[in-house]
Image (cartoon, rainbow, N blue to C red; front, side):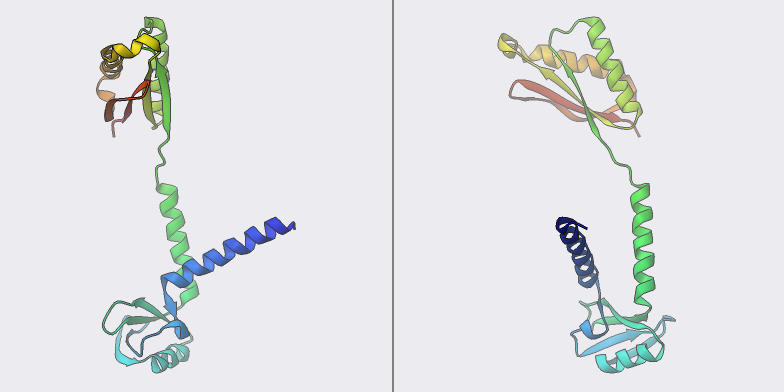
Length: 188
């Protein structure tokens, strides 16, 4: 394995361990003197010293995990930490699968666009919206066209009118330099 890949591997592994350690303190990492302990069967064991709580967890063959470090005293739970982390990673992966990722596609138009060209660009926008993406409609001005931004705004209004009720305007038309942009998205 090349050195650069090894370095990346160990850096990723280190950051993963750092994230796990940052999330919850376990066993000897717990810094409080006394903690409120909850058993693996959700039974309140009361307030005890960390050493006694760790001993109680080891008797059950489990770990002592600090779940509420800001409590007075901090709350710790006796649990199988490896199993907990595994289930947490599975839940995170499932949530990531169900997450919808939007992409912003762009359609560029001119203020004096011909009808046929306009409808071709409109079909592109409809296809992007049909795929569930957002569309950034950009009107590009050249030279003296900058003196008439209302022509660009008219083209954007025409796009909105043609697409009808199938879309939601997420960002109103805005002139930025030589371009006027508007963001639209599909209706939920």
